[in-house]
Image 1 (cartoon, each protein chain N blue to C red):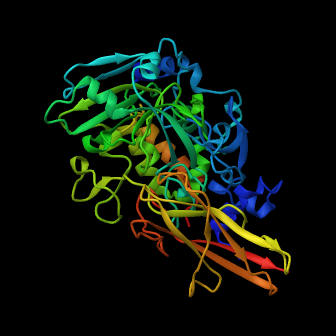
Image 2: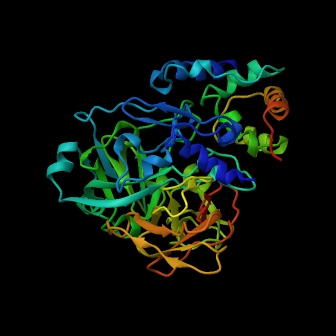
Image 3: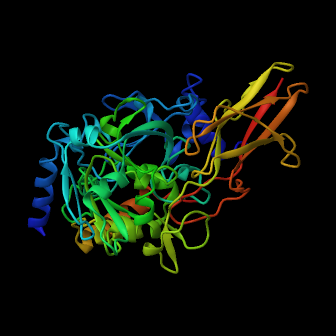
Length: 396
Length: 97
């Protein structure tokens, strides 16, 4: 009897196979069939919600080293999403901790600062929420609220330094052009600790995989915070504020929080309470992209298990595979190193010499020594599902 | 109350970018309270959020969600409307096992 987790993965993979079995479709998130739909400018993606739009990348599209712009997942909290004219777009940089507030055009960003590029995974905090047991409310994501891209832009810290950082600055606050339907709904603003905002890897990005950012991924400029979950990667960026007091907004104080002390990862001390703290870094994780549960392998055939492994920026040290119920582990072969914030491909030759069922487990280890746990740490918002991955196959 | 709702509708009308063609085909289950639930919930979000969340929801979870929509997101609902919507969602979209 396949688990819901397996069925969900099968449902997402069904697209790759040209149609999932009815049982898998019926078991899609929310108990309904998964619908593929193309937003303007995008390929068909798994529609998790219509408005605000939340669209997931199908498993087959997570196979390439870099996720295509037109297949990259889409995630919004607020339904009013303007198409921004790049000519009239302005970025305001100020705040109580800024010495010389500035206003930048896209041209200023392109020509006034050193241009840099970085490969990084963008993973939604709630990726895999739909696989949680017990179920938790929220967008019922499968595995595809993530992707890996080459981001191009300027360093946030270069822009902050141009505006001048006053002593006593503790956080930097970011606002985007998307707004709520009702004036009473909190606008989507996020903050970063000042030390993270000054990290050389944090960008104001205008390009994704060598192209201008797609509308649905934050055109004309978005924040890129390598190693931290997608909630901080504010899209359609319009305002950056250096602040001398912790930001009090709903999306920091009440949303995107995890139980304090339950998970590894950087601490966000100015936003921490004894009970809860903001989610920060992506935890070490892996994803099997080559096979969906129930796949049949021909006995004696040369078959490789393959997928991706990533973490919050230390890089992947090893990926191991177990074919004996996690008693012993064999190393997988790692692919090209695209940088410590990117994902790393892995491949493993499957032993197909014996007929019968075959369950393979996969676990990644980061360079800082963290590994994937066997069991889920349940938390109310359904974050940080990085448990050991498994797939049940059949050799015949 | 009427003023606030009228304002909400105005905001929605002024936000054509919010909706794409086809959303109007989404419908909740026919049962008492449906029209109220559809009318109020769809001000801010499409109705597919409701069936998508049903497997995670029981009556208590819907109660918390409706309270969050009112208190945190500013949904203009009277107590009576909130009660009717809760009854409708708990009867039709509470599949948590």
